[in-house]
Image (cartoon, rainbow, N blue to C red; front, side):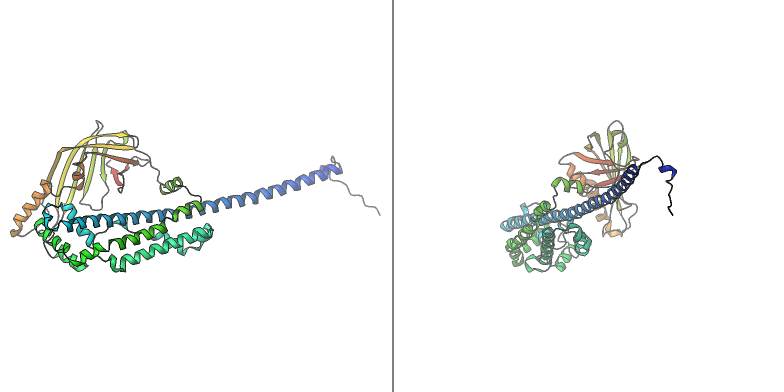
Length: 405
């Protein structure tokens, strides 16, 4: 029996060839769609992997460049300390003519208590690199990985040498330094400090420490040879100096340079001590007043003596910078001792200390700097609401201010 199949009505207008063509086009379209979907996903994933690789590489390369700055800072401090100490040794009988700054450079050079953030290695990125296998897989460059491992190993060797090697050990022991600073008056006056310096300069340990200067510098130069491999790392990862500069500036802060109209007002600095206050009042006529209160503690009384000073000047903006011109003659200082307590026999010393605070011996460092140049320029950043402002001087930590509403 012959069975005839009826073609569905929606296909009745198509010939066999047309039907086949339709089916082929439909299949081809589906195939292309699948290829595009999976191809796009693969391409996007590849872009993500490349972005992650560059992020990891730049983090490590930037970290190593920072280590170079640390070693250079150590070398500069070593060289400065050596030169000053050598000069003092050659003039040991004429220390009275040497400046206080040079004497304190010498004291810091041979002591253990001096601490500089710029002379410490940051270990966070190294720890992440060594412990995170995902970082290794993303980088996927054996030469780069070997270079980084060698650099970090060399850095660790230098740290151990600085801690344990006899040539790095300071001439002044921790106990001696403590006794000089805390249990004597040797550092309080120039008359008592000079004999201590002369005695130390004549000691064998200080002479030997100076004599081993080249041994320490040799260690610094050796680590620099490893750190300079970072230049090869930049080539291997195809990372430019501009890439690194942009990377170090990467931030999620939505800030912008402050406009003149936004700066006008009263701004209070964010400080670590509630008793310390720094305020700038910027007026629309381009004049300003700065007020600062500083708490002072001392062994001769209980509590805090409060030093207050004010100064005026003029201000203007230039590009993204705030320019301040201070009028040093306007500086006024007074002291509030209402919150301190002391014994009657300390009256004379209290009055002398107050006189030092008012007379300029303990004026803020800012004033001493301004005596050399009364003009200061700050880069500005301000938030979207215009209520928080960041002022930055070159090579200094930014200071943050809140606008008084």
